[in-house]
Length: 123
Image 1 (tube, helix red, strand yellow):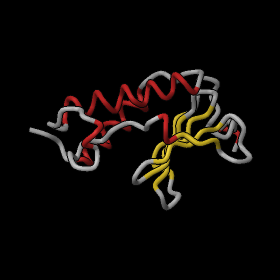
Image 2: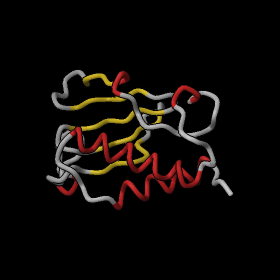
Image 3: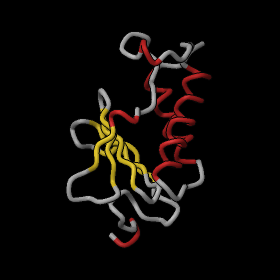
Image 4: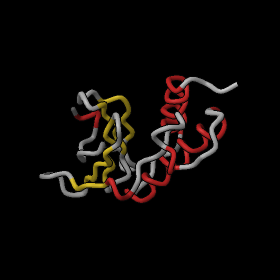
C-alpha cells in the first residue's frame, strides 16, 4: 500500500539525514536525487515519469535546468521547485526551504558547515 506524500516526505528527510555527508555540490545533488527516487520507488505506487510530474502525485528531485546561483553567496545554488527551494552548497551541504522561508531540512557538508559556510555549532 502506498504511503501518503507527507509520510514519504518524512521518510525522505530521514533517509537523507542518515546518509553520510558529502564534500561537493555534485555529490549532494546526486545524493538528494538517489534518496528521493528510492523512497518514491518503494512507497509512492507511481512509476517514475518526469513528464507527468504535475499529474501523477510522485515527488521528483530538482532538475538542473531549475538551478540558479544565489546572489551574494558564491558557491551556493538554489533549485526552484513547485512548493519549495533546495539550496546546495559547494561543500555538499543541503538545505530545503518552504516558499514561506521556513527551513524544513538542513544537512551540513562533510566539512561540518551549512550551505552558507557556517559551522552550526559556532552559531
